[in-house]
Every structure is written in structure tokens, then in C-alpha cells.
Amino acid sequence: MTTSTRGAKTPAVLVLEDGRIFRGRAYGAVGETFGEAVFSTGMTGYQETLTDPSYHRQVVVMTAPHVGNTGVNDEDPESGQIWVAGYVVRDPARVPSNWRSQRSLDDELVQQGVVGISGVDTRALTRHLRERGAMRVGIFSGEAVAGSIDEASLLAKVQDAPQMKGANLSAEVATKEAYVVPAIGTKKFTVAAVDLGIKGMTPHRMAERGIEVHVLPATATVEDIYAVNPDGVFFSNGPGDPATADHPVSVMQGVLERKTPLFGICFGNQILGRSLGFGTFKLKYGHRGINQPVQDRTTGKVEVTAHNHGFAVDAPLDKVSETPYGRAEVSHVCLNDQVVEGLRLLDQPAFSVQYHPEAAAGPHDAAYLFDRFVTLMEAERA
Image (cartoon, rainbow, N blue to C red; front, side, top):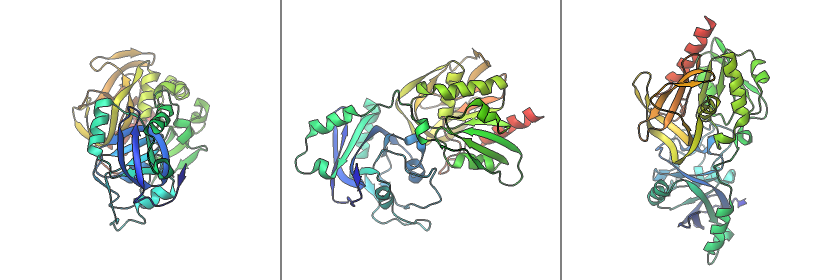
């Protein structure tokens, strides 16, 4: 529950589920909110982060100390709303300054009812999450912290909040109705994109390559996919625990049986992993931000990439695995911790990556993956 009162001088507290408390001032809407505390290491692109559906039910801690400097505009959102459950910053901009800015970030958070907190030592909070792992958190401001604070009561509320493990969230953020993003220029291919929390830049990147993209709801069936007569099938990013995504796994397996060119990113990578028979697991604190080093093992090239995931695929790094759909291997790996960052099948045209090659705010090292998808569709057509 929130109010739209400007909270620049309103006290606020952040309570982690292990009992640690940080004090600050309200930022954005005043009220209370709950979610999983995660940190993002991006120095830029906060508007894209806020509107990424993969952050549904997460409270994002920004490691960059200054946030909001370039304000907010209507061109950069990745979806129709802010999806983060809460927002934590150290020093919010007092006045935005950018020729594209249309309003302040604070105003946007208030307008959309997003409860945040500023004036927090985000370095200490990030170190705490790195050591203890992502955990549930609550942000409280206004009446909840007026006068003396009942810390035990606030902590109990946090510990009663749902956990991310076991959460089935993709249908909550996906489109309810199918829509089409037309190809830019000459149409070359048709792709059916299953929306599990898709970002707006993803179909745009495909459209730039002459692809007409039919974006389908998360509840789409195999029959729905092939009703658009696709040259390829795409599974998007999205929030939640991939262990709960039985329907997308079943649908992807139907696509694999037909050997249609297939590409998945982020949640789509985890769906491919499960479809091939691999397990998934929750990372201690996940990968988030726009500076994560990944090696493409098929070329040896190292890319700086954009990430937002708290779960990963449990697949062997150094051997080819036999699956019901042919041989599979790990194609990409994170150089920080050796987490699986991509999969590919060797006997049919299917691959996936764990990160975000569309990366509107950058970096753009991985944009070639959309070209790789086009190459697969060209080869299948030939």
C-alpha cells in the first residue's frame, strides 16, 4: 500500500530477512513493499532496469552511487510499466539534466506507486548480500516508521513475504493477447516469440534484421506457435523459478521435436536446459548489471554482457551431453564464476544464452547472436 506523497524528508527503513536494518529517506512513493533484495552493477540504464519484467517481485539495490541524473523519458522503457517491487539508491539526483529527459525519476516512481529508499550505504548493503546471498527484504516509510520503530514487527512482515524460489511468475508479466512487431524494411522471416517477460528491445532487434515477430502469451501452445507458420521460435527472458515452468518446457519440447530453429535468452536458456533434461538451481546472489564477462566457447571471444538472472542451468561444462534431442554442449560460460551462460544443440538448430544480447543500454558485444539466429533460419530454408 502506498501514497503519492513526496518523500524527500520522510524517514524510511530497509529491513532484511536476517534482521539487518538500514535507515534512510523515502524515495518515490511512500508506504511499504516486499521482495527479494538483489543488486545491479550497471552504471547506466536504470530506466531499462526498472521496466524489465524479469525484475518482477525484486527490490533492486543500485551499486552506482548517483541515480536519476538523466531523468526519465518515454522512449527507453522496456515495457509498459515499472516492474521492480522496490528501489534502493544512495544519492538520487536533485535535478535531472539531459536533453531527452521529460520528468524526474522520483516523479516516475511516485506516479507508478513504487516504494523506494535513498540515503542508504549501498556499498555496505551490497557487500552484505554478496556474503549472505539474495534474501527477502522490506522497505517501510510513512506511517510504518512514524515515531518509535517496532523492528520485530517489521522483520516478521519481511519473513512472511513469499520467497523467489518456487515462484511461478512469467504469466503475471507476459502479454495477455498476441501482437505483431513488423519487420523493418523487407520481410525475410517470421518468428513466433513466446513472451515469458519479454523486453521491448528484443523483437526490435529481430525486426532490424527483417524478421516479423509474432509475440505470443506465456500460455501459448505448440499449436498457437505453428499457427503463425514460423521460420523460427524464440523464448524470452522472464522472472521466477524455472523449476516451476512446466508449461513452457513442454511447449519447447514440442518445438524441438519439429526441429524448427530455436533461440532462447535468459529464462529461455533455463527452459532449454530443462527441456534437454538438465536441472536448474538458485545462485547465491545472481548476476545483474551490464558489465559481466562471458566467453563464447565456440569462438573463444570474451564479451562484456548485460545480465539479470538469479537461477542457472546445471549442465557439465567440459563434455558433450546426450539428450532426447541429440547432442548438447555448454556454448557460453561466465568468467567470474564458471556459471553456464549458454547452450547449443549439435544435431539440430537450437541454442540459447543466459544473458541479454538486446541490451538497449549496452553493451552490444552480443548482438551477433541475433545474426546467428538468422543464419540458422537461412540454413533451414535452404
